[in-house]
Amino acid sequence: MDEDYLLSRKKIFNATFLVILAILLSKISGLVRDQIMTGYFGITYDTDAFTWAYFIPNLFRVLFAESLIIAAFIPIYSTYLKRNQKDDLKIFVNSVVNIMVVVFLVISAVIFILSPEIGAILSKIANNQLDVYKFMVMNRIMIFSLVLMSLSGLVTGILNSHNIFTISSLAPFVMNVITVIFVILLFSHLGIFSIAIGIIVGSVMHLVIQLPQLKASPLKYRFAINFKHKGVSEIFSLMLPILLSLGAVQLNNGVDNFFALNLGGGNTTALTLSWRVANLPLGVFSVAIVTVLYPLISRQAAGDDIKGIKESFSLGIREIGYMMIPATAGLVILSYPIIKVLFERYNFGPVDTKKVAYILIFHSLGLIFFGLLMILNRIFYAFKNVKTPLKVASFSIIVNFILDWILIKFMDVGGLALSTTLVALCNVAILIIILRKKIGNFGGRRIFISYGKILAAAAVMSAVLYFLWRWLENFAYQGMWPLILLLFLAIVAGAGIYIACTILFKMEEVKFVVGLFKKLRKDT
Image (cartoon, one colour):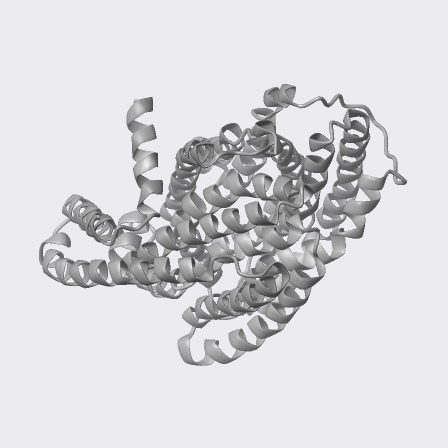
Protein backbone atom coordinates (compact mmCIF):
# COMPACT_ATOMS: atom_id res chain seq x y z
CA MET A 1 0.00 0.00 0.00
CA ASP A 2 1.20 3.58 -0.79
CA GLU A 3 3.14 5.17 2.07
CA ASP A 4 0.73 8.12 2.01
CA TYR A 5 -1.99 5.76 3.16
CA LEU A 6 -0.09 3.52 5.51
CA LEU A 7 1.56 4.62 8.73
CA SER A 8 4.77 2.77 9.46
CA ARG A 9 5.42 1.58 13.00
CA LYS A 10 7.79 4.51 13.50
CA LYS A 11 5.11 6.97 12.38
CA ILE A 12 2.62 5.33 14.71
CA PHE A 13 5.00 5.91 17.63
CA ASN A 14 5.54 9.56 16.70
CA ALA A 15 1.87 10.29 16.09
CA THR A 16 0.84 8.48 19.27
CA PHE A 17 3.39 10.47 21.27
CA LEU A 18 1.91 13.79 20.13
CA VAL A 19 -1.64 12.57 20.74
CA ILE A 20 -0.68 11.35 24.22
CA LEU A 21 0.68 14.79 25.11
CA ALA A 22 -2.43 16.51 23.77
CA ILE A 23 -4.84 14.12 25.48
CA LEU A 24 -2.86 14.32 28.73
CA LEU A 25 -3.33 18.09 28.71
CA SER A 26 -7.03 17.62 28.00
CA LYS A 27 -7.50 15.08 30.78
CA ILE A 28 -5.56 17.11 33.34
CA SER A 29 -7.53 20.24 32.46
CA GLY A 30 -10.73 18.17 32.79
CA LEU A 31 -9.69 17.17 36.30
CA VAL A 32 -8.98 20.83 37.11
CA ARG A 33 -12.48 21.67 35.90
CA ASP A 34 -13.90 18.97 38.18
CA GLN A 35 -11.76 20.24 41.07
CA ILE A 36 -13.15 23.73 40.58
CA MET A 37 -16.72 22.42 40.45
CA THR A 38 -16.46 20.18 43.51
CA GLY A 39 -14.47 22.75 45.44
CA TYR A 40 -17.12 25.42 44.90
CA PHE A 41 -20.21 23.19 45.09
CA GLY A 42 -19.21 19.87 46.72
CA ILE A 43 -21.10 16.77 45.57
CA THR A 44 -24.77 17.57 46.11
CA TYR A 45 -28.07 17.52 44.27
CA ASP A 46 -26.99 20.81 42.63
CA THR A 47 -23.95 19.16 41.07
CA ASP A 48 -26.15 16.20 40.17
CA ALA A 49 -28.41 18.67 38.32
CA PHE A 50 -25.39 19.93 36.34
CA THR A 51 -24.19 16.38 35.68
CA TRP A 52 -27.56 15.44 34.20
CA ALA A 53 -27.95 18.73 32.31
CA TYR A 54 -24.61 18.06 30.59
CA PHE A 55 -25.12 14.30 30.27
CA ILE A 56 -28.20 14.65 28.05
CA PRO A 57 -26.67 16.61 25.14
CA ASN A 58 -23.45 14.61 25.54
CA LEU A 59 -25.44 11.37 25.33
CA PHE A 60 -27.03 12.40 22.03
CA ARG A 61 -23.67 13.56 20.72
CA VAL A 62 -22.00 10.24 21.51
CA LEU A 63 -24.94 8.14 20.34
CA PHE A 64 -25.58 9.86 17.03
CA ALA A 65 -22.54 11.92 16.07
CA GLU A 66 -19.42 10.40 17.60
CA SER A 67 -20.45 6.78 17.06
CA LEU A 68 -21.51 7.47 13.50
CA ILE A 69 -18.33 9.39 12.69
CA ILE A 70 -15.98 6.82 14.20
CA ALA A 71 -17.66 3.70 12.89
CA ALA A 72 -19.10 4.74 9.52
CA PHE A 73 -17.85 8.13 8.37
CA ILE A 74 -14.09 7.50 8.65
CA PRO A 75 -14.11 4.14 6.76
CA ILE A 76 -16.23 5.59 3.92
CA TYR A 77 -14.21 8.83 3.79
CA SER A 78 -10.97 6.79 3.77
CA THR A 79 -12.25 4.69 0.87
CA TYR A 80 -13.00 7.75 -1.30
CA LEU A 81 -9.67 9.27 -0.29
CA LYS A 82 -7.77 6.12 -1.20
CA ARG A 83 -9.44 5.97 -4.62
CA ASN A 84 -8.89 9.71 -5.18
CA GLN A 85 -12.63 10.22 -5.87
CA LYS A 86 -12.70 13.92 -5.01
CA ASP A 87 -16.16 14.69 -6.44
CA ASP A 88 -17.81 11.85 -4.55
CA LEU A 89 -15.88 12.91 -1.45
CA LYS A 90 -17.24 16.46 -1.61
CA ILE A 91 -20.83 15.35 -2.17
CA PHE A 92 -20.60 12.81 0.64
CA VAL A 93 -19.12 15.19 3.23
CA ASN A 94 -21.40 18.14 2.40
CA SER A 95 -24.47 15.92 2.60
CA VAL A 96 -23.47 14.45 5.97
CA VAL A 97 -22.62 17.91 7.40
CA ASN A 98 -25.92 19.46 6.35
CA ILE A 99 -28.02 16.50 7.50
CA MET A 100 -26.29 16.55 10.89
CA VAL A 101 -26.89 20.29 11.35
CA VAL A 102 -30.59 20.04 10.52
CA VAL A 103 -31.24 16.91 12.59
CA PHE A 104 -29.32 18.03 15.67
CA LEU A 105 -30.87 21.49 15.62
CA VAL A 106 -34.29 19.83 15.73
CA ILE A 107 -33.25 17.46 18.54
CA SER A 108 -31.76 20.37 20.51
CA ALA A 109 -34.92 22.43 20.09
CA VAL A 110 -37.14 19.56 21.28
CA ILE A 111 -34.99 18.97 24.38
CA PHE A 112 -34.92 22.73 25.02
CA ILE A 113 -38.74 22.81 25.07
CA LEU A 114 -39.06 19.65 27.19
CA SER A 115 -36.39 20.56 29.75
CA PRO A 116 -38.91 21.27 32.57
CA GLU A 117 -40.60 17.91 32.06
CA ILE A 118 -37.27 16.06 31.94
CA GLY A 119 -36.19 17.84 35.13
CA ALA A 120 -39.44 16.87 36.86
CA ILE A 121 -38.88 13.20 36.01
CA LEU A 122 -35.30 13.30 37.34
CA SER A 123 -36.43 15.06 40.51
CA LYS A 124 -39.04 12.38 41.11
CA ILE A 125 -36.35 9.69 40.86
CA ALA A 126 -34.26 11.76 43.32
CA ASN A 127 -37.11 11.76 45.86
CA ASN A 128 -38.07 15.33 44.82
CA GLN A 129 -34.70 16.70 46.02
CA LEU A 130 -33.29 17.77 42.65
CA ASP A 131 -33.80 21.46 41.77
CA VAL A 132 -35.86 21.35 38.55
CA TYR A 133 -35.31 25.05 37.79
CA LYS A 134 -31.50 24.76 37.98
CA PHE A 135 -31.55 21.66 35.81
CA MET A 136 -33.81 23.36 33.24
CA VAL A 137 -31.66 26.50 32.95
CA MET A 138 -28.36 24.61 32.66
CA ASN A 139 -29.82 22.09 30.22
CA ARG A 140 -31.17 24.89 28.00
CA ILE A 141 -27.83 26.70 28.07
CA MET A 142 -25.83 23.60 27.12
CA ILE A 143 -28.21 21.77 24.80
CA PHE A 144 -27.00 23.46 21.62
CA SER A 145 -23.49 22.22 22.37
CA LEU A 146 -24.88 19.07 20.73
CA VAL A 147 -24.72 20.74 17.31
CA LEU A 148 -21.34 22.36 17.92
CA MET A 149 -19.65 19.25 19.31
CA SER A 150 -21.13 17.03 16.60
CA LEU A 151 -19.70 19.25 13.87
CA SER A 152 -16.42 19.35 15.75
CA GLY A 153 -16.40 15.55 15.88
CA LEU A 154 -16.95 15.42 12.13
CA VAL A 155 -14.00 17.75 11.57
CA THR A 156 -11.92 15.53 13.85
CA GLY A 157 -12.85 12.49 11.74
CA ILE A 158 -11.75 14.26 8.56
CA LEU A 159 -8.46 15.41 10.07
CA ASN A 160 -7.68 11.96 11.50
CA SER A 161 -8.28 10.45 8.05
CA HIS A 162 -5.47 12.73 6.83
CA ASN A 163 -3.24 11.65 9.74
CA ILE A 164 -3.70 14.96 11.56
CA PHE A 165 -4.25 14.18 15.23
CA THR A 166 -2.71 16.79 17.53
CA ILE A 167 -5.00 19.81 17.07
CA SER A 168 -8.13 17.65 17.45
CA SER A 169 -6.72 16.09 20.61
CA LEU A 170 -6.04 19.57 22.03
CA ALA A 171 -9.61 20.80 21.43
CA PRO A 172 -10.97 19.37 24.74
CA PHE A 173 -8.10 21.09 26.58
CA VAL A 174 -9.18 24.45 25.17
CA MET A 175 -12.79 23.73 26.11
CA ASN A 176 -11.87 22.81 29.69
CA VAL A 177 -9.67 25.88 30.19
CA ILE A 178 -12.47 28.17 28.98
CA THR A 179 -14.95 26.46 31.33
CA VAL A 180 -12.62 26.96 34.31
CA ILE A 181 -12.12 30.63 33.44
CA PHE A 182 -15.86 31.25 33.23
CA VAL A 183 -16.51 29.54 36.58
CA ILE A 184 -13.82 31.58 38.32
CA LEU A 185 -15.04 34.85 36.79
CA LEU A 186 -18.81 34.34 37.05
CA PHE A 187 -19.25 32.12 40.13
CA SER A 188 -19.92 34.96 42.56
CA HIS A 189 -22.69 36.33 40.33
CA LEU A 190 -24.20 33.24 38.67
CA GLY A 191 -23.33 30.31 40.94
CA ILE A 192 -23.46 26.88 39.33
CA PHE A 193 -24.88 28.35 36.10
CA SER A 194 -21.35 29.64 35.39
CA ILE A 195 -20.25 26.08 34.54
CA ALA A 196 -22.97 25.73 31.91
CA ILE A 197 -22.00 29.04 30.28
CA GLY A 198 -18.35 27.95 30.21
CA ILE A 199 -19.32 24.66 28.56
CA ILE A 200 -21.25 26.29 25.69
CA VAL A 201 -18.52 28.89 25.01
CA GLY A 202 -15.90 26.13 25.21
CA SER A 203 -17.90 24.07 22.68
CA VAL A 204 -17.67 26.93 20.18
CA MET A 205 -13.89 27.05 20.56
CA HIS A 206 -13.67 23.24 20.38
CA LEU A 207 -14.89 23.54 16.79
CA VAL A 208 -13.23 26.81 15.79
CA ILE A 209 -9.62 25.83 16.56
CA GLN A 210 -9.86 22.79 14.24
CA LEU A 211 -11.29 24.57 11.19
CA PRO A 212 -7.97 26.01 9.86
CA GLN A 213 -6.57 22.46 9.57
CA LEU A 214 -9.26 21.51 7.05
CA LYS A 215 -7.08 22.99 4.32
CA ALA A 216 -5.39 19.57 4.29
CA SER A 217 -8.54 18.11 2.71
CA PRO A 218 -9.87 18.73 -0.81
CA LEU A 219 -13.25 19.83 0.56
CA LYS A 220 -15.27 22.95 -0.17
CA TYR A 221 -18.49 23.55 1.73
CA ARG A 222 -21.82 24.18 0.05
CA PHE A 223 -25.36 23.65 1.24
CA ALA A 224 -26.44 20.50 -0.59
CA ILE A 225 -27.87 17.15 0.42
CA ASN A 226 -27.86 14.12 -1.86
CA PHE A 227 -29.74 11.28 -0.17
CA LYS A 228 -29.20 9.05 -3.21
CA HIS A 229 -25.42 9.25 -3.08
CA LYS A 230 -23.91 5.83 -2.36
CA GLY A 231 -21.82 7.03 0.58
CA VAL A 232 -24.74 8.89 2.17
CA SER A 233 -27.03 5.88 1.77
CA GLU A 234 -24.38 3.59 3.22
CA ILE A 235 -23.68 5.71 6.29
CA PHE A 236 -27.36 5.93 7.19
CA SER A 237 -27.94 2.24 6.60
CA LEU A 238 -25.22 1.68 9.22
CA MET A 239 -26.53 4.34 11.62
CA LEU A 240 -28.98 2.42 13.81
CA PRO A 241 -26.81 -0.62 14.57
CA ILE A 242 -23.77 1.59 15.14
CA LEU A 243 -25.79 3.90 17.38
CA LEU A 244 -26.81 1.05 19.65
CA SER A 245 -23.48 -0.79 19.67
CA LEU A 246 -20.99 2.04 20.22
CA GLY A 247 -23.55 3.99 22.24
CA ALA A 248 -24.10 1.07 24.62
CA VAL A 249 -21.46 2.41 27.03
CA GLN A 250 -23.30 5.74 27.25
CA LEU A 251 -26.66 4.00 27.62
CA ASN A 252 -25.22 1.85 30.39
CA ASN A 253 -23.80 4.97 32.08
CA GLY A 254 -27.27 6.52 31.86
CA VAL A 255 -28.79 3.50 33.59
CA ASP A 256 -26.06 3.67 36.25
CA ASN A 257 -26.81 7.37 36.81
CA PHE A 258 -30.52 6.69 37.27
CA PHE A 259 -29.78 4.13 39.96
CA ALA A 260 -27.25 6.50 41.58
CA LEU A 261 -29.72 9.39 41.58
CA ASN A 262 -32.11 7.32 43.65
CA LEU A 263 -29.42 6.63 46.28
CA GLY A 264 -29.21 10.24 47.49
CA GLY A 265 -27.59 13.58 46.74
CA GLY A 266 -24.16 13.59 45.14
CA ASN A 267 -24.04 9.93 44.10
CA THR A 268 -24.44 10.69 40.40
CA THR A 269 -21.64 13.25 40.65
CA ALA A 270 -19.46 10.82 42.65
CA LEU A 271 -19.95 8.12 40.02
CA THR A 272 -19.05 10.60 37.27
CA LEU A 273 -15.94 11.85 39.11
CA SER A 274 -14.69 8.30 39.61
CA TRP A 275 -15.23 7.49 35.93
CA ARG A 276 -13.28 10.59 34.88
CA VAL A 277 -10.32 9.73 37.12
CA ALA A 278 -10.28 6.19 35.76
CA ASN A 279 -10.47 7.67 32.28
CA LEU A 280 -7.20 9.56 32.77
CA PRO A 281 -4.94 6.58 31.93
CA LEU A 282 -7.61 5.12 29.65
CA GLY A 283 -7.98 8.35 27.70
CA VAL A 284 -4.30 9.20 27.57
CA PHE A 285 -2.98 5.81 26.42
CA SER A 286 -5.79 3.62 25.06
CA VAL A 287 -7.59 6.41 23.21
CA ALA A 288 -4.28 7.68 21.82
CA ILE A 289 -3.34 4.23 20.51
CA VAL A 290 -6.78 3.60 19.01
CA THR A 291 -7.03 7.13 17.56
CA VAL A 292 -3.82 6.61 15.62
CA LEU A 293 -4.42 2.98 14.62
CA TYR A 294 -8.05 3.22 13.51
CA PRO A 295 -7.54 5.22 10.27
CA LEU A 296 -4.71 2.80 9.45
CA ILE A 297 -6.95 -0.22 10.12
CA SER A 298 -9.72 1.36 8.00
CA ARG A 299 -7.32 1.77 5.07
CA GLN A 300 -6.05 -1.78 5.52
CA ALA A 301 -9.63 -3.07 5.46
CA ALA A 302 -10.40 -1.01 2.35
CA GLY A 303 -7.40 -2.68 0.67
CA ASP A 304 -8.28 -6.19 1.97
CA ASP A 305 -4.95 -6.27 3.80
CA ILE A 306 -5.88 -8.96 6.36
CA LYS A 307 -2.26 -9.55 7.37
CA GLY A 308 -1.84 -5.84 8.07
CA ILE A 309 -5.04 -5.75 10.13
CA LYS A 310 -3.84 -8.68 12.23
CA GLU A 311 -0.51 -6.95 12.89
CA SER A 312 -2.22 -3.65 13.77
CA PHE A 313 -4.69 -5.41 16.06
CA SER A 314 -1.94 -7.39 17.79
CA LEU A 315 0.09 -4.22 18.30
CA GLY A 316 -2.90 -2.33 19.69
CA ILE A 317 -4.08 -5.06 22.06
CA ARG A 318 -0.57 -5.60 23.47
CA GLU A 319 0.16 -1.91 23.95
CA ILE A 320 -3.20 -1.36 25.66
CA GLY A 321 -2.46 -4.21 28.06
CA TYR A 322 1.05 -2.88 28.69
CA MET A 323 -0.37 0.48 29.76
CA MET A 324 -3.70 -0.41 31.40
CA ILE A 325 -2.82 -3.35 33.65
CA PRO A 326 -0.25 -1.46 35.80
CA ALA A 327 -2.54 1.60 35.75
CA THR A 328 -5.31 -0.56 37.20
CA ALA A 329 -3.07 -1.86 39.98
CA GLY A 330 -1.87 1.63 40.85
CA LEU A 331 -5.37 3.13 40.99
CA VAL A 332 -6.71 0.31 43.15
CA ILE A 333 -3.87 0.56 45.69
CA LEU A 334 -3.74 4.37 45.75
CA SER A 335 -7.41 5.22 45.16
CA TYR A 336 -7.92 7.03 48.48
CA PRO A 337 -4.85 9.32 48.44
CA ILE A 338 -5.41 10.07 44.73
CA ILE A 339 -8.98 11.26 45.31
CA LYS A 340 -7.92 13.14 48.44
CA VAL A 341 -5.25 15.05 46.51
CA LEU A 342 -7.47 15.73 43.52
CA PHE A 343 -10.70 16.85 45.17
CA GLU A 344 -10.66 17.17 48.98
CA ARG A 345 -10.90 20.91 49.61
CA TYR A 346 -13.53 23.48 50.50
CA ASN A 347 -16.97 21.86 50.10
CA PHE A 348 -15.58 18.42 49.19
CA GLY A 349 -14.91 16.68 52.51
CA PRO A 350 -13.35 13.41 53.81
CA VAL A 351 -16.67 11.54 53.54
CA ASP A 352 -16.86 12.48 49.86
CA THR A 353 -13.28 11.30 49.37
CA LYS A 354 -14.06 7.86 50.80
CA LYS A 355 -17.14 7.53 48.60
CA VAL A 356 -15.40 8.41 45.32
CA ALA A 357 -12.30 6.35 46.20
CA TYR A 358 -14.51 3.31 46.89
CA ILE A 359 -16.20 3.68 43.49
CA LEU A 360 -12.84 4.22 41.75
CA ILE A 361 -11.57 0.80 42.81
CA PHE A 362 -14.29 -0.94 40.80
CA HIS A 363 -14.05 1.38 37.80
CA SER A 364 -10.28 0.80 37.71
CA LEU A 365 -10.71 -2.96 37.46
CA GLY A 366 -12.31 -2.44 34.06
CA LEU A 367 -9.60 -0.29 32.44
CA ILE A 368 -8.07 -3.10 30.40
CA PHE A 369 -11.49 -4.23 29.17
CA PHE A 370 -12.61 -0.70 28.25
CA GLY A 371 -9.40 -0.25 26.27
CA LEU A 372 -9.68 -3.58 24.46
CA LEU A 373 -13.33 -2.89 23.67
CA MET A 374 -12.34 0.30 21.84
CA ILE A 375 -10.08 -1.47 19.40
CA LEU A 376 -12.27 -4.57 19.02
CA ASN A 377 -15.33 -2.55 17.99
CA ARG A 378 -13.28 -0.59 15.49
CA ILE A 379 -11.90 -3.74 13.89
CA PHE A 380 -15.46 -4.84 13.14
CA TYR A 381 -16.46 -1.40 11.86
CA ALA A 382 -13.41 -1.25 9.60
CA PHE A 383 -14.89 -4.34 7.90
CA LYS A 384 -18.27 -2.51 7.89
CA ASN A 385 -19.64 -5.28 10.10
CA VAL A 386 -22.12 -3.54 12.37
CA LYS A 387 -24.39 -6.44 13.21
CA THR A 388 -21.97 -8.29 15.47
CA PRO A 389 -21.14 -5.35 17.79
CA LEU A 390 -24.86 -4.47 17.79
CA LYS A 391 -25.90 -7.88 19.08
CA VAL A 392 -23.17 -7.88 21.73
CA ALA A 393 -24.02 -4.31 22.80
CA SER A 394 -27.74 -5.06 23.03
CA PHE A 395 -26.95 -8.01 25.24
CA SER A 396 -24.69 -5.82 27.42
CA ILE A 397 -27.45 -3.27 28.07
CA ILE A 398 -29.70 -5.99 29.48
CA VAL A 399 -26.87 -7.53 31.53
CA ASN A 400 -25.86 -4.11 32.90
CA PHE A 401 -29.40 -3.34 34.10
CA ILE A 402 -29.69 -6.71 35.86
CA LEU A 403 -26.24 -6.40 37.49
CA ASP A 404 -26.99 -2.82 38.61
CA TRP A 405 -30.21 -3.95 40.24
CA ILE A 406 -28.48 -6.86 42.04
CA LEU A 407 -25.11 -5.34 43.02
CA ILE A 408 -26.51 -2.04 44.31
CA LYS A 409 -28.26 -3.98 47.09
CA PHE A 410 -24.97 -5.34 48.41
CA MET A 411 -22.38 -2.72 47.43
CA ASP A 412 -24.33 0.55 47.26
CA VAL A 413 -23.02 2.91 44.53
CA GLY A 414 -19.82 0.84 44.14
CA GLY A 415 -21.95 -1.94 42.68
CA LEU A 416 -22.79 0.29 39.71
CA ALA A 417 -19.09 0.68 38.88
CA LEU A 418 -18.46 -3.06 39.26
CA SER A 419 -21.40 -3.77 36.95
CA THR A 420 -19.83 -1.57 34.26
CA THR A 421 -16.55 -3.48 34.58
CA LEU A 422 -18.17 -6.92 34.40
CA VAL A 423 -20.19 -5.94 31.33
CA ALA A 424 -17.02 -4.73 29.56
CA LEU A 425 -15.28 -8.03 30.39
CA CYS A 426 -18.20 -9.97 28.96
CA ASN A 427 -18.21 -7.90 25.75
CA VAL A 428 -14.48 -8.31 25.19
CA ALA A 429 -14.62 -12.10 25.61
CA ILE A 430 -17.50 -12.46 23.15
CA LEU A 431 -15.99 -10.16 20.51
CA ILE A 432 -12.56 -11.85 20.63
CA ILE A 433 -14.15 -15.26 20.07
CA ILE A 434 -16.14 -13.97 17.10
CA LEU A 435 -13.20 -12.03 15.61
CA ARG A 436 -10.94 -15.07 15.71
CA LYS A 437 -13.51 -17.03 13.73
CA LYS A 438 -13.63 -14.23 11.15
CA ILE A 439 -9.95 -13.49 10.50
CA GLY A 440 -8.30 -16.58 11.95
CA ASN A 441 -5.29 -16.61 14.24
CA PHE A 442 -4.25 -13.03 15.03
CA GLY A 443 -1.15 -13.87 17.05
CA GLY A 444 -2.85 -15.25 20.14
CA ARG A 445 0.30 -16.98 21.39
CA ARG A 446 2.31 -13.78 21.07
CA ILE A 447 -0.39 -11.82 22.89
CA PHE A 448 -0.70 -14.48 25.60
CA ILE A 449 3.06 -14.45 26.27
CA SER A 450 3.09 -10.65 26.44
CA TYR A 451 0.17 -10.55 28.85
CA GLY A 452 1.82 -13.16 31.06
CA LYS A 453 4.90 -10.96 31.37
CA ILE A 454 2.77 -7.85 31.88
CA LEU A 455 0.84 -9.53 34.73
CA ALA A 456 4.06 -10.75 36.34
CA ALA A 457 5.62 -7.28 36.18
CA ALA A 458 2.42 -5.67 37.49
CA ALA A 459 2.29 -8.17 40.37
CA VAL A 460 5.84 -7.28 41.46
CA MET A 461 5.01 -3.57 41.17
CA SER A 462 1.79 -3.99 43.16
CA ALA A 463 3.45 -5.83 46.02
CA VAL A 464 6.20 -3.22 46.37
CA LEU A 465 3.78 -0.30 45.96
CA TYR A 466 1.34 -1.68 48.54
CA PHE A 467 3.91 -2.07 51.30
CA LEU A 468 5.69 1.15 50.31
CA TRP A 469 2.49 3.15 50.69
CA ARG A 470 1.62 1.40 53.97
CA TRP A 471 4.87 2.87 55.29
CA LEU A 472 4.62 6.27 53.57
CA GLU A 473 1.07 6.97 54.75
CA ASN A 474 2.41 7.28 58.31
CA PHE A 475 3.86 10.60 57.14
CA ALA A 476 1.64 11.49 54.18
CA TYR A 477 -1.47 12.75 55.96
CA GLN A 478 0.26 15.47 57.97
CA GLY A 479 -0.70 18.03 55.33
CA MET A 480 -1.63 18.38 51.67
CA TRP A 481 1.87 19.12 50.39
CA PRO A 482 3.50 16.11 52.14
CA LEU A 483 0.67 13.98 50.73
CA ILE A 484 1.21 15.29 47.19
CA LEU A 485 4.97 14.78 47.38
CA LEU A 486 4.84 11.25 48.84
CA LEU A 487 2.03 10.19 46.47
CA PHE A 488 4.07 11.44 43.52
CA LEU A 489 7.14 9.53 44.75
CA ALA A 490 5.06 6.37 45.20
CA ILE A 491 3.65 6.62 41.65
CA VAL A 492 7.11 7.24 40.17
CA ALA A 493 8.55 4.33 42.16
CA GLY A 494 5.74 2.03 41.02
CA ALA A 495 6.16 3.02 37.37
CA GLY A 496 9.92 2.60 37.61
CA ILE A 497 9.63 -0.88 39.11
CA TYR A 498 7.13 -1.93 36.44
CA ILE A 499 9.24 -0.66 33.54
CA ALA A 500 12.36 -2.25 35.04
CA CYS A 501 10.57 -5.59 35.27
CA THR A 502 9.38 -5.39 31.65
CA ILE A 503 12.95 -4.60 30.54
CA LEU A 504 14.21 -7.53 32.59
CA PHE A 505 11.59 -9.75 30.92
CA LYS A 506 12.80 -8.48 27.51
CA MET A 507 9.34 -7.43 26.45
CA GLU A 508 8.88 -6.10 22.94
CA GLU A 509 6.22 -3.66 24.18
CA VAL A 510 8.74 -1.71 26.24
CA LYS A 511 10.17 -0.44 22.94
CA PHE A 512 6.97 1.57 22.56
CA VAL A 513 7.65 3.46 25.79
CA VAL A 514 11.35 3.88 24.96
CA GLY A 515 10.33 5.26 21.57
CA LEU A 516 8.09 7.83 23.23
CA PHE A 517 10.84 9.02 25.57
CA LYS A 518 13.35 9.22 22.71
CA LYS A 519 10.85 11.33 20.82
CA LEU A 520 10.35 13.53 23.90
CA ARG A 521 14.10 14.03 24.32
CA LYS A 522 14.52 14.84 20.62
CA ASP A 523 11.67 17.39 20.67
CA THR A 524 12.94 19.08 23.82
